[in-house]
Every structure is written in C-alpha cells, then in structure tokens.
Length: 464
Figure 1: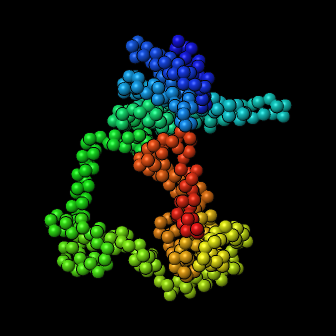
Figure 2: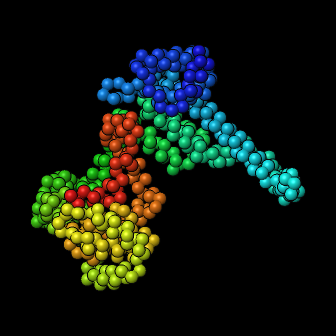
Figure 3: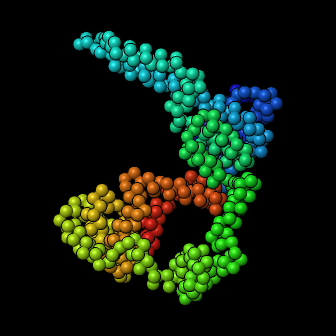
C-alpha cells in the first residue's frame, strides 16, 4: 500500500481539485492508515512522510460557498503530528537529502564546464592543456579538505547551502501552520532545526515571525511565560511613563479625556513633576488625539517646525531650482510627469496642473538620482492642497523623502515596498485571521491591492 500511495503522491505536483467530498475523504483515509502503520511499526520512510506533507495542501475539494476544504484539514488530528521526534527526523533526513542532491548537481555542472573548457585543435579534437597551475590548485584544495574536521566540513556545507536550508524550513513552517500544530511544539522544533543547521539569526527571526504571525488563534501565539512577561512590561512602561506617585498616575490616565489646549497648558505649568513626567502624554493629546479641526490649524506650522523648514529661505531656493528645471530636466522625465499629472486631481478644487508641474519638475532636478517615480504626484498634490504654497509643498516633500529614507520606496527595485507588503500580510494574519485565511485560500497577497497605499503614502484618496 505504501508503494501505491507513493506512486499516487508523485503524480500530484500542482494544485488538484477533486470532484466530491467522498474522493478526498477516501484519499485521507488511505493516508491516515499508512501513517498509523508508520507509527506502530516505527518506520523510517521520511521521504514518504514529506511527500504527504507536500501534497496535503495541494489537494482540495470545493465545498459550499466556494470554500476550499484541503486534504490537510482531514489528517491534521492524526497522532503522528504530535510527536516532535518525527518532525525532527523528517526535517533532518530531507534537508540532508536535498543538500546531497544539490552537491551532486553542482559536481555534475563543474564536470560539464571542465569538459567544455578543453582546448580544441583545428580538427575539432579536444586537447587538455597541461595546466600545472590547475593541478596545484586541485592539490591544495584536496589537502585543505583533508585538514578540516568533520564538524568544520559540516558547517561549510551548511553555509554553502544556506538559502536551500532556509527555503526548506520555510516549507516546514507552512506545514506546521496548515496542520494546526500547537505553537509551543512548532516553536521548539523550528528552534532545534535552525540550531542544528546553523541558520543565521536574521533568517531564524523571519521563520519565527512567519510561524507566530500565521497562528489562527492569536491568543495561542504566546506561551504563559511570555504573556506574563509582556503583562509586567506593560505595567512597568505605564509606571515609567506616568510616574510612581498616585497623583501623577491618576492625572496621567485622565489626560486622554481632556480636549482643551488651555487645560493641557495649565497642567504643564501646574508642577515640576507634571512637566517632567507627563509632558510627552500632554503633547500627544494636544497634537494627535484632540479635535481634528484644531489639529488641522496647527498642522502646517508643526510640519515646518519638525522638518526644520524656513519659509523665507525656501521660497528663494524653490524659484532658483524651478528655473533650472525648465532648462536641465530631461525630456523623458518631463513626459512621465506630464502623463501622471493628467491622471491626478482632475476633479479636485484648489489645485491645478501648473501647481503639480512646478513642484514635480523642481524636485526631479534637485534629486537627479531619484528624479520622479509614480506616486510622487499624489504626495505633491496632497501637500499643496493642505499648504496652498508650491515652495512649501516642495520643501516638505523633499524633507519627508530624505528624513524617512523613502528613496528605497521609490527606486527601481522597491525594497521598502516589498517589506511593507510583508508587514501588512503579517498584520492581517494577526488581527484579522479569518480574512487572512480567506485571502490565502484565494492565493491573494497584499501586493495585489495595497501598492497604491504605500507608493502614494495613502494620499491617493485625497484627490476625490
């Protein structure tokens, strides 16, 4: 039966929808029977177990309301998954197998390259060059290999195959999640695997984050000890922030209910303790949490103050750069900006094409490395709508891009954009697990719908 099951699983190398529930139930029953034999007879066919893991998220049945029922959900309660030793043996067996396979492929490729590198005479006959230097190199390499200890060889092998190991462990993390493995067990197995195969700390952190953020029940993402530590940290942070006396603690907790600048200012002047301990909370209440209309009146002045922009100086600088842009800006960049201007703020009062053109042309000249990228048109338009001054809108946009290193958001490889996609996916999985599960079933990730959010800094909605 194991051989027959192996033959069936080999054929499934892509998503497979079965016709009805009975079909997927029958396949699940066969797999469960084989896994029971695996446990009772203490088998070591970890390659078959790995194939089951790979296939169980490929095979599904479409239930009511287009909900996919995966094979993994029908075998998740089998006792084999609760044995951490099986997971460790399977991971170690498959990783070593894949590393050996990669080594064989590399050796075969080197042999082919060596064969192709033979000198050929005018009759087309291959002639090996004497290459004394190559002989010495090979001899030195062999000697170096003999001098290495077994542990050193293993570490070198793991380092050479670091990406392969990381990718395979990422697959196992997905298996932990799909089979609803208890978080503590999955965490323990993953830590063992990263230690055994010398995975870098940064990559280990990514794997642990992936495991933690995809837990279907967020309350189970943390152990009891971690929950206790976080609770104590919150209490400690609150005491550090609001002081240790009863009076500052009471006043500090009540600040969020005060919506008057005069009252907040009075608190700062009330006592030295209030000024020193509660200043940060008072500023947050006055600038971030207060009535929106009052914040809007302060916002322009605050932006200029925070970004250290001198309105008098910037206007002269803006005029000089604007004249330069008319002479030095490449025609290709001008055409790109003109195209996007035609698609921006078409039905919005208080801004014209000329306003956008001046701001974007000037910035493209000031920053020749970045010049212009889609999304800047909405940022520039939003700033002009709020400040109603082309020079100030240009200055704020330049400072925001510089201060927050947004050039990585706009350059061709888009590293910050990709990082933001990952962060949003993880946040959805933690805060909206049902939505995350649905998006995952439909093979939708955040890049499908959120690129305009990040590339425009959420300003695209302001044009409507």
